[in-house]
Length: 219
Image 1 (cartoon, one colour):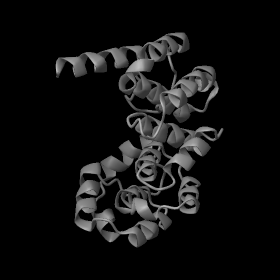
Image 2 (cartoon, one colour; image 1 turned 90 degrees about the vertical axis):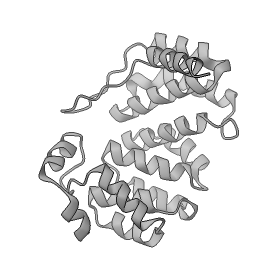
Image 3 (cartoon, helix red, strand yellow; image 1 turned 30 degrees about the vertical axis):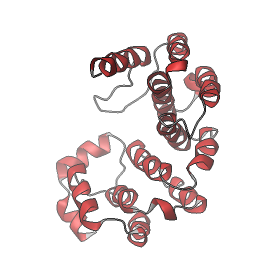
């Protein structure tokens, strides 16, 4: 914690707070967090202590150094109860996706009405879409219908994650690409409040089409 405090900057604190990071943080750059991750390696007991500190920088580092193999459903739920920041939610999703409880939490959290639970659920789904061993095309098709039906009435950050999940289907599941694009057109613009930042939620149709064009161009 002393090293994290030393690495933090007042400017980063201002920026991260505009993004929703909360009050308890030092403002450590992500570059420095990754350096600490490389230095520490995997240390699950340390990760749990870092998380318990309540500090946002420490919790992101916790998600980076935790051992996915030791992530249980109980611990995943305990950590999710504390998530109030979309960026931290993304890191928790990356960790849980590598854990034995990924499939269970994916389906459970996608169905939650709570903003960050649903965000992480759809973050997990977007990762899983890339691997046909984790999700079938039939499951992806089912989620397309749910996303189309529920995205506009879902909570703020959940909408962003659901839009990303739709994009993931359109890019990584060629048999469903036309259906994903058609669904995106019917959905229209997805409005997400990104706070006092320049961040934007991508237009799904344009993003899918550009990604496919780049992939074809690299072949």
